[in-house]
Length: 376
Image 1 (spheres, rainbow, N blue to C red):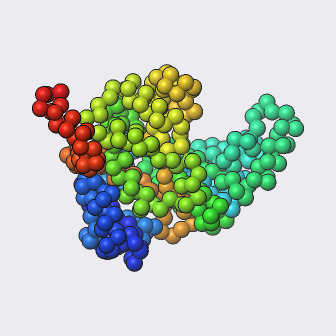
Image 2 (cartoon, rainbow, N blue to C red):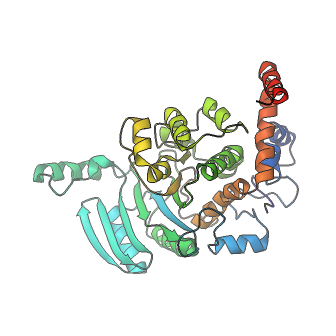
Image 3 (tube, helix red, strand yellow):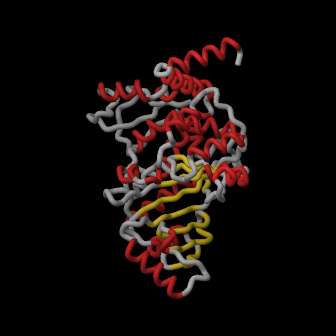
C-alpha cells in the first residue's frame, strides 16, 4: 500500500543519493519503514513540496475521506480537528477574515478570544494562545483590563490560534483556502526564529481496542525519524518542551514485539513515562475518552482534555507557503496508519528494532532465545 516517503533537497547531506544519507538510512530506519521511504524511486524533492506517499488510487480514496479499519465515524468519513498557530494577525482581525469567507456569527468571549458559530466549516474559535490573557465571565473589570493588557503586549510573540471542530477530511481543502486568505491578510507561520508555530491534528478514533491504539503508536515510533526528517520541525520548537520525544526507555518497551498490555497496564505505562500532553503524539485525550477514571488514577490528576482522538502535534505551521497545506500533513499522518494496518511490515519493523538492540545486548538476546526454547 505504501509507495514512497519522500524528503530532502538535492545536494544536502540528507540527499538520498549521498553517502551521508545512505549511512543514516541504514542505521536509523527499520526495514518496514524503508519500504515507505526507499530512495531512488522518484526524483528527490524538497520536504515542503507535495509528497507522494501512496499509489494514486489509494491517495485519492483516502484523501476523499475513506476510513481505514477501526476508526470509521458514524457516516464512514474520517474527521479531524485542526489547530493552527500563526502570527502577524490578531484574533479579532482573523475572526472577521473567517466570517467574510465562511459566514457565521462572531461572538466576543474576551478581548483576545472570538468564537464563530455556524460557519460553513462548523464552529471555529480564534484566540491568543495563552491562558494568562483570557478572563472568565465572572472576572472583575480590573482583571479583564489587566489580562487584556497582557495580551496586547505579548501578541508579537504569543501565537494566535485557530481551532476547528472535527472536520470531514473532504473539507480540509476548504480549510487550506481559509489559511490562504488569512495569509493574504497578514498571517505568518514559522518563518523567523522567535515564531515557533505549529499545527495540531486531532484525529478522530472510534476503536477502543487497546491493541489498535498500540499498533498506531508502534507505527508512529518506527516512522518518527522519517517524519521529523521530512517535516523538519522548526529549531525553536524542538528546543521548547511542546513537541517532546518519548523517553527512550518507553520507546524500547512499546517497540518490543512481545509487549501486549491490557488497557489498564497500557495506561499505567503511558502515564508514568508521559504525564504530559507535550509529546509529538499525545495519547492522553484518547485514553481518557475510553476510561477517564483509569487515566486520572494513573496521572494523579484529572486529564486536561478528553476527546476520542490522537493529538498529533509535530507539524510546523507554514501558513502562507505555496507548497504547504493541512491536507499534506494529513497525508503524512496516513502513512502512520497505513503501516499500523500492515501487520506483516509492522512486525518486521518491530523485530528489526529488537534485533538491532539485541546486538548491543547479548545477554538480553540469550534470555529471549532461552524463553522461546522453554516455551515461555
